[in-house]
Length: 403
Ligand code: LLP
Image (cartoon, rainbow, N blue to C red; front, side, top):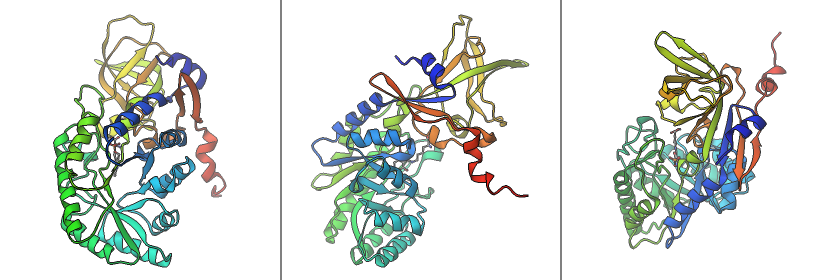
């Protein structure tokens, strides 16, 4: 049981709290599901990029899936070895590509023919052969929220099968490209196995057809996307997930690379916020808290559900309320029509499932400093990021103040 009251007293609110032991458990379960095959878990840093969190996964043997050179640098700082680091993303700049090549990471996931050209050119300048993988867009509907769906031709991600084939042939004939892997990632918060299985089949067939023309790949990168339980979702079991994928790889000697994010971090995280006021506008009840959409954007952006638990002495009957923050936007809410007892100034609300895409999607909107972050390990709490102060927010502007 996490003592939220004590944590709020020590670290103040709003506050992110992460249970590292839970993350370990999730990691081990997923890794275990792929046993019997060579596999690498490459933690998707974007889901929670705090250095201590990455370091924790590094200590478990994890690699890293990165989508910017900033994330690549974080992975290195946290101690992830270069040969376990992958760099993906539709819009890598020349500088990012150059640095990734110089850092000799496992491979760059290429997402367009134009990008392949840039990678080749930069590798040539550096007089090396760059290991690459190509992200295939299998045109499969992942059956998730449209904002986090990535595997349809309507989405900007990856390339069609035919394009991918052309790119592999080009890469294979190039002195400066070394095609080692194939990648797909059809979306996030996936709760249906069928689209994953169908995509894996398409991509595995592609590996076979490349093999027939003597292009031998080593890595089968299945992306991330495993959904978690926010409310009442029926989720995919890691074992079934692994079985479905492995079933498509019969006769192929490939290392499976998985890029889990949310599955490892979401339900390990809590966002703790304090009640400032209750107010009533006509029939509508609002609970105003000290955290805002700048801290946790998911409800505002995706209308995402996050369970809310009240820590209060109040024993009044529960009634519906919107839980809202101090930001000057009507979209600044954590829940609509949430059943809560009447609350007092300084009561605490725990917002659940906040460990993934929480802090990282935060901002300084309304000149609000981002929350502190705390990690729990074996019952011990440790500050892993200081609360941002006003001085931090203006530091990059102050010396340029116009007259
Ligand atoms: N690999 C690739 C190539 C990805 O694009 C992503 C997520 C992952 C792995 C990790 O996916 P996960 O295992 O976490 O589902 N902000 C949204 C989620 C965006 C996901 C972007 N890509 C949210 O809050 O739901």
